[in-house]
Length: 236
Image (cartoon, rainbow, N blue to C red; front, side):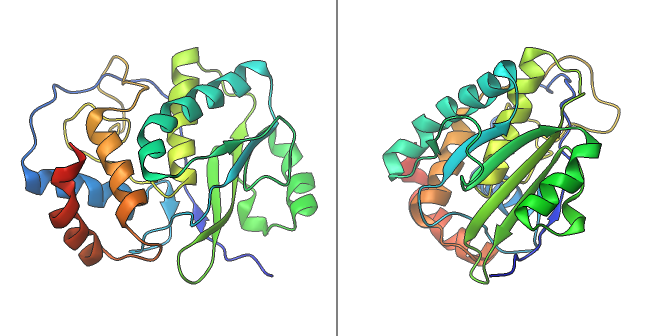
């Protein structure tokens, strides 16, 4: 079956400070969830929700021990929000290139080989990107993550990048400009000094649970609003 292409988006590992958080109104909370699901800075496919309808497998196919640890940490963080809704990402051992979600730390010169081996289009030939493949319903089929192996990062920055990439790989590829403590906070160009969190906030966890408990692949913003009104308060 031919791949359905989704234009990838740049994922950087810079570190900056967060603004002072403030309490959100319910309308702002809905806006936040809309942004991280539909404003796909990290997954560009338009105004529909992308998500898995099965428990995907995951493997770091090309990466060293430190890089594997960053993704182990990301997957461990996601166990808490996903377990209550019956969804999990099944971590396989390293180097399993048939996994549903694969991570490769590469040099640019490695990309032609990887694209040829996986029968991927030339548009996937970019590093620091998440490349999702999905069907007409918005159901994810495969996700390919390519990261520049020469990128110099602190452990904290690498873990944050791994968590954001993993969230994007399950359909949460948006960012928010709201001044809140969130892994989805959008760092402005030029930064604001300091270092953002590399862990999920309670708001992040509620949003992840809402998506995987109640939202269907291909959902539109109007569908989210109805689900939010009915179920958001139950996720406290």
